Length: 140
Image (tube, rainbow, N blue to C red; front, side):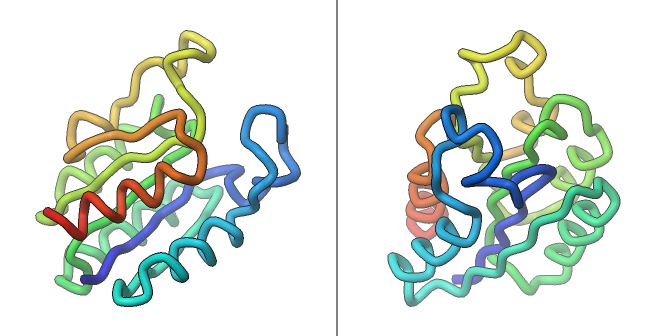
């Protein structure tokens, strides 16, 4: 199983940015933990603060190099129809992940334009959300 994991804006600041909201784990900690828990799964990680670069990376998954994808689009979840369209074009299952419970936060975070084109969404479980997404994708 080959899974692309795409992380959006500001996720490179995990562990530093608002740890009371996002926790102390860095993005590298999350990636390392997933590699350790799923040694038989090829996980390719990508993070960008740029919408276009995220779209370019998602489009690479169209070529058959991946069996599934996980995306944490960050704030782009609420605004980026361009990322939504890129995810929608994929013929592989995609799970949207958010570290925080977006429904318990500011009103603008309550709606994801990307979620409707994903197989599912996991929110509010911190780094464990990524692990659950991998478990789901490996089992589906």
